[in-house]
Length: 108
Image 1 (tube, rainbow, N blue to C red):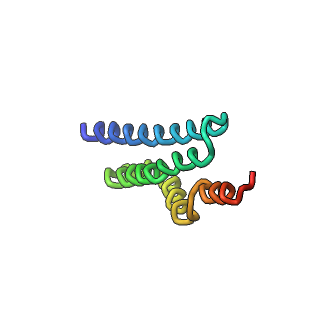
Image 2 (cartoon, rainbow, N blue to C red):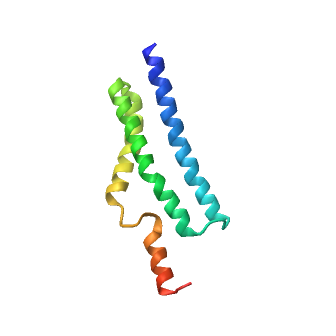
Image 3 (tube, one colour):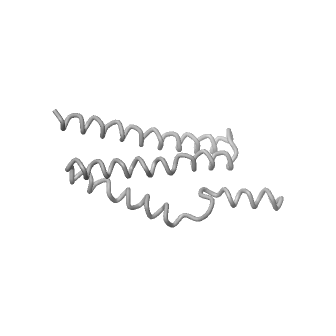
């Protein structure tokens, strides 16, 4: 019975990840159809990037702690990619600094 609760909790964590990814895709679709400007779109996406990384880390740690080694090995490369992306990011993710410099200099 305990294994059932572990998989149900894992399912809800995965649903949370999917919701975060769908939100990012909706922001990009709004940007593509010019419903939102690039600065607002990047700030909305940036607001959910770190929670996405945290949820993925929690999921991988959850698999490790519950002894589901195969699932932990499957989710580990994505977690590694997230950690590298966060460590190597430049100041102002998603082009916010670039957009700010373009608007300040007056280039169009």
